[in-house]
Amino acid sequence: MTSVVTAGGISVTIRGTVVDEGETVLDRLVSDGVPGALVSRNRQLWGPDAAPLAARRLGWLGPPGDARSLPARLSGPAGAARDAGLDRVVLIASGGPALAAGAIAAARGRT
Image 1 (cartoon, rainbow, N blue to C red):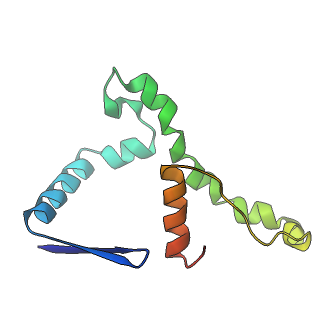
Image 2 (image 1 turned 180 degrees about the vertical axis):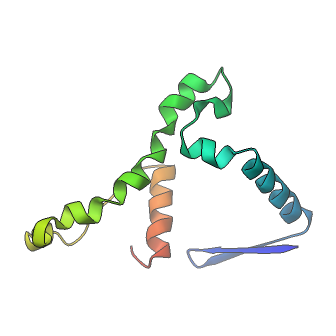
């Protein structure tokens, strides 16, 4: 089997058993309910010893949902923020959040 992933103008082609094994692992994760547990911020995914730390580190799951309301809040009644001169929003982050935001912006043709 062959899998091609393209992001940011770079394509990576994966061939062979690694693709099949990856699909098997993905199927197992889904059947075990891991994506749902992650979205619901189930800190027990990492086991009882890691649960307290996981609880503190799962906060990154909320911002994507929170961000969905940003355009309406920024434009406000009759585009108040835009009328006041707002022409862009800058996200300041580091590590994974910055990489994720950059990938999302690139996928939508924005910089």
